[in-house]
Length: 127
Image 1 (tube, rainbow, N blue to C red):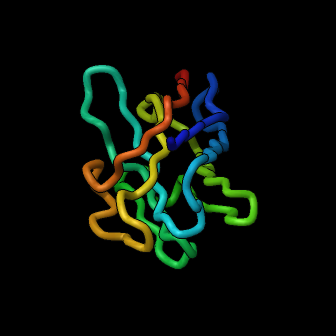
Image 2 (tube, rainbow, N blue to C red):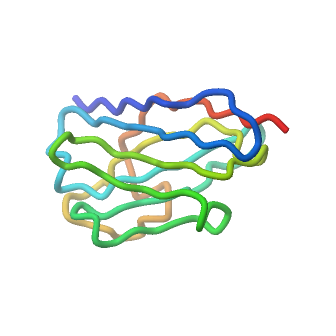
């Protein structure tokens, strides 16, 4: 049984910041690549960011590069997404997920590479 729990979403104004958190239960957190995806109504799920198990490799979607930062604290088994300079187009449900295979970063930007997902946390950015 794997549980993925996101938190930290909310309603904010353009230009503000939010920090999302994620905790995964039922797996050895430190050996898995972790990712953030988002999905807005009527749109496909979009890759946001991913980070390798040791934090040495990070990946960002083009739309969030230089504004968002992914990080992890393996001691606390928590994944973070720091979101700065938020725009209305960032409005979406944000999902945290574990890679399918331990120690792997294969195809980290593709949703098919992950098989455990949280319930999502809503981020709404007003103009």
